[in-house]
Amino acid sequence: MTLPYVRKSGGGIPLVLVHGYLGGGAQWRGQMRAFKGMRVVAPCLPGFGESARLPAPKTVGGFARAVLNLLQRENIPRFFLLGHSMGGMIAQEIARIAPEKVGALILYATGALGALPGRFETMEESRRRLLEEGAQKAAARIPAKWLARGKNAGRNYRLAVCLARRADVSAHLAGLAAMQAWDGRRALRRIGCPVLIVWGDLDQSYRREQIDFLHNNIPRAELAVIAGASHLAHLEKPRQFNAAVRKFIARQNI
Image (cartoon, rainbow, N blue to C red; front, side, top):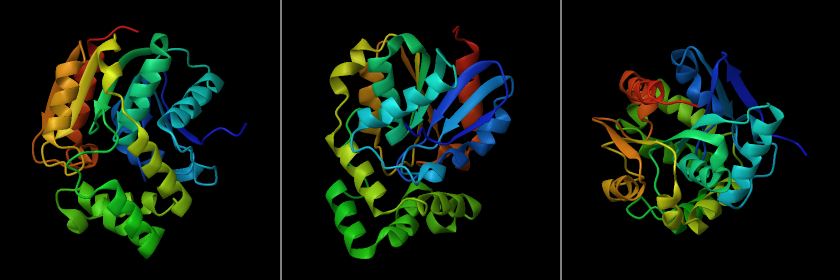
């Protein structure tokens, strides 16, 4: 079994960072520097980033198993878990199938319903445009929706596009299919660990309704809203993002 590529830094308590659709482990470079004193582990999901050569699973559960297999190889039996966007769905799935492994959960710019109601475009529209325009144009167009300044976001936009361009059409389609078929709403009340929800108030992918649904249905959840940030708040407002995550983790035991 070929396992995904992983970026690693530091030592101490493990913090696993799971990127989303069209992302990659390289998007967390700032966090790997900021979270000193922790063993930060940032996989590249199959089909994306530096794991682009691997076939992408077509289900959220398939991605979750790939991450768990990687963590088993890395000898990490218990960890803090942060998931962004589609990675937040994967993190919820990991918490469902392996709750004993998750000491605390950070759900960042994500929701409990993979169809993403209120998204800047429907999944069907993304799929149609992908097949018409190709992966490279999609990789330039979609990240612009993830940043408050869009294509004018400088290096943040360039990084998002660079990562997105590693994925081919099959990975795009697998990610869209995995998200659209996934529904984690029934499992929310069974999440037993502490949860932090992080959301930028300009996010065009996950609207406030999805965030409030998470907050209201997870028993031990708290919410951190980052003003003036969109879907990639960790790049746009890194100080606020990193501070919220560090403060939450500092209060936890593993």
